[in-house]
Length: 335
Ligand code: GZL
Figure 1 (cartoon, rainbow, N blue to C red):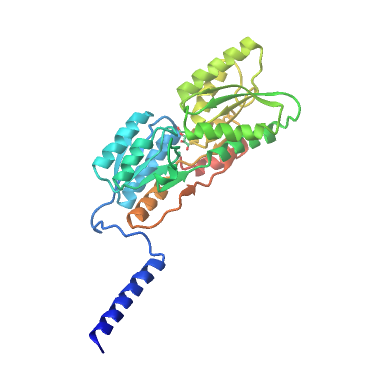
Figure 2 (figure 1 turned 180 degrees about the horizontal axis):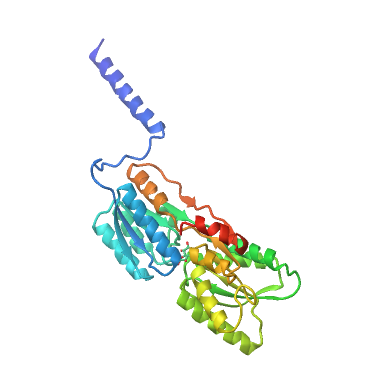
């Protein structure tokens, strides 16, 4: 066979092979990381503001150890500038993956553009972000965490079912989470969505308690004082997390009122302290928001380094726990 024919056939077979590889939906390029080298994950944690956050940190550290992943962990003490500094340091250290729980939704554009330029994939855990320009989804591989709007709806639905008051006024005070944070914005929105269907339910006071017990107590004290001055009755407290509710319970008791009876309380997280307060008859319901994201994060990190494609959104599955199930449920709680 003429030489030119042999070359043509060889070339066409080569082109066909390349085309087939392209059409086979082959995964992204697998990483060149040698099998014996540990994966390095840089994680910027918000702080240690609540029982939820402590449990979240424990979950991430324990799962990294179990997965054999080298974890570079930084605690930002609830300050965005500390998270940005930590992410920049992870970029300089050339970690394999960066993950973080953004303390607030906005202000991440520059540092996420730097991570993208450095070709280091970013995973969002717990809370999401908004970018001032461009599509936020172009700057992170996946966001794993709860649906906070749904948590707010669940709190509203539980309250309306529990109160069984269709006509008389129900005055609600609200302890919001950290200003500008996704859970605070979304839990408020979800709760209000339900209240819109019940005109007799009214949020008469709403202020941030920054997700902490101390601030929750302080703000509840001010709510009680101003309601007394205005001659208003507080029927319900809606707290965006259990820690603020537990702080508020102390303020309610110090004001000579019975939390869980004089003032009905619904909060979010489902930490052990909430179950203990429900068993004591001081809290009426908690909406679960699981902090146990460690295993999911390590699986996602390994899959990323192995070149697998991840779902853009991984939603945590959660429930609603009214006081009547607290005693039975407490032994099962993992956080
Ligand atoms: C929710 C998480 C919130 C918790 C608070 O996923 O971001 O932050 O509800 C925690 O307890 O401080």
